[in-house]
View 1 (cartoon, rainbow, N blue to C red):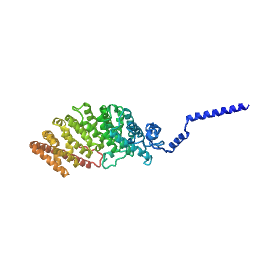
View 2 (view 1 turned 90 degrees about the vertical axis):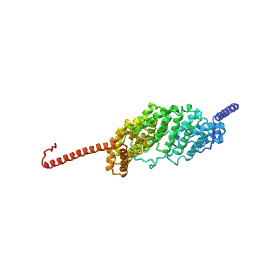
View 3 (view 1 turned 135 degrees about the vertical axis):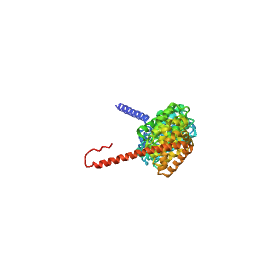
View 4 (view 1 turned 120 degrees about the vertical axis):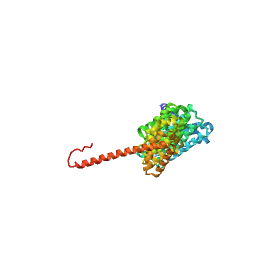
Length: 505
């Protein structure tokens, strides 16, 4: 009996020891696992050592976590990785990838007091990446490019919230006086842009491989960012897009087409966009590199996209860049001058004097590159408009039109075609010489009259005689009209007491 009891006790002890062994294999150090969880919960963590480079980064944080993307609280450790100087050369490439993935985390900059430590760690990491790329030690393999472009996209491609501006405000918008809107996340954005610029410009980057990641979608997202309110961002975008256009020849037609679409939407729909000037500046350089003869695609771009950009009221924001692009086309192919001048006349402002002065300045630049055959095709409608400008009561408009005679090339064109031009503008010159209120306009008009008189006295006197005859006819018509009204008033006064209708023969 005693032997049976002792055997049962021994069997129970053996079972309990087996259970302890099995639980030990599942958790060899339960205290260490509980301490790790408590560290994550409390936010305490140690700095990563060199041995951590080989560990997967997901054990430290998840870049795809929506908390990071939306600028939420950092619930896992975000600590700096070792410097490139502190690791052997064989591990620098893998460290570069881990730093790139680490920089994919997005922080909220709307609250300047949030995540200060983590923001500074990310900024320093981005600066290290810039220096490492500049040193030329990084090998941009396909996997490296993929992670790099993912990081850049995560940081840059975001929803812009532009300030509401009415086009009436844009019309009087002064770029120098108006305080631009600055992006609060610029301390990180600037370094990411610098990193992207160095990546595009790096000779280590093979365009044939990189085009898989710098694709049409990437280009479109870059173009969307041109609507940013921050001028510093638009300046970086301008340089980067120009480098992309130069390096990735396969994307050139797509980039031009996408820019066209932005212009179409701006002119025909919104008339609101912050980056038109920067896009036109890029185009100016692109047009300068067009081969001759110009393709039909480029001529259509001029007529359908560039010339209609003169229509919006906020032309002053980008007129300098637009004028340069237009002039580049005419200098490339002088036969386009007729189309350009007629396009300017189509969109010529009627009541906006400041815009009219801009048109006159651009017209002078176009005429400087215009040759005789193209000038003769459009000179009649052109000088009808110039005559209206000469007659303008706004002295700056009239003065700017008279300055055309200070340009030797334009004056030469006018001299050779004086028999057509002088009869068109003579009435405006004669009225300015007699009646214009501004002394500068009056003096310039007399100088222009003297040029024509010295050049061709016979034609001048003929135009003067025609003007006097027209003036006499106008006086007769005016006197007849006044007499009719006077007679009407007399008849109406006689029959004021009756309801009889007044008839005037």
